[in-house]
Image 1 (spheres, one colour):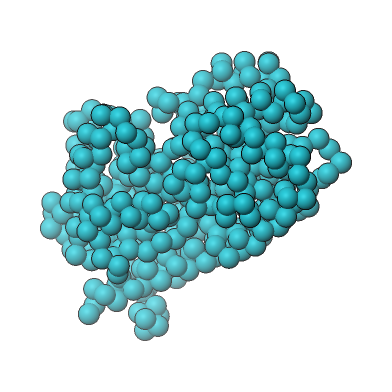
Image 2 (cartoon, one colour):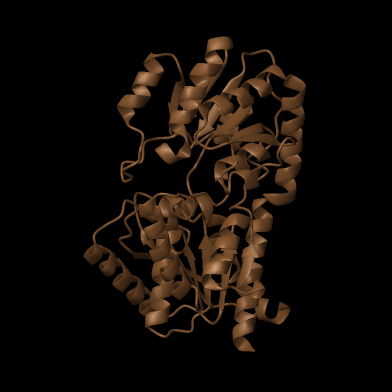
Length: 389
């Protein structure tokens, strides 16, 4: 392993991901360290205003027109064809695909071209189809399972899971061996940036929710819970941080946000680049998601800031807390239970403060971004070594 690490100069590492801002938020530290170690790093995704930012860091960039809102059959086949072209152009030594479409399309492209490139597949949540019970979801789950089984049938691969629920599902679907997979809880947080600051107990309590403003993130449940809490605790301030996702049909509308603000339910902060400060000025961080999460980055960041968490028992969300020790979990889509959990922490300052302290310790043990980066570099080294055997 050490010999391989000392001779990685020029190894070509290809990241395939849906969009540049997600890559920057969730995988950039890994790519930067790989570049520092001597890998030649290419990022293939849909680019927005961040293209030059990534280019200036020394990455090679290739546009792939992934659509996060879904598309017709012909447009998706066009994307799959583009992924094949990228593999042919880059001729990577390792390909690391991130999120659902890139994982599936990369796996299918590798299979169809009979390319034996080592495949690292990062499962950042399986989406609602593997948890929903509707007839449509069951049909979609069957189709998705077939695609996953083919996409993850590469001879040399490593599948990275963020939570044990997703791991169990895909291990069964794709018949994964223990040496084909690894569990890494989320994308980590920089503990020197997301650091612990004591709560300000001289001000009215603040509850913060930060996310892409999608219905499945539990925004409506958060609003309903806020109304219940404020009926008995009118001084509690509820913050909503984030922006509508206009490419997603399930986005919360701006008009709805304005209505909640006008009703005095929330204070809306929009997009913020100072989340560590926002969380440090808050007392509780809440994410009532029923989305197909990996491990939500916002909950990792909340733990790093030493804040008690209220979230759901949804896969991924529940993996970000130690129940009763660093936070509380409630059933999905249940604003009443959500309100009760929030009131419990609002009324019990000592419990909340202790949870925050334990959350920081949990973050130090599980969510340090440096550890996450090291684990990924170890995966690259081991998978290359496996190919040389």
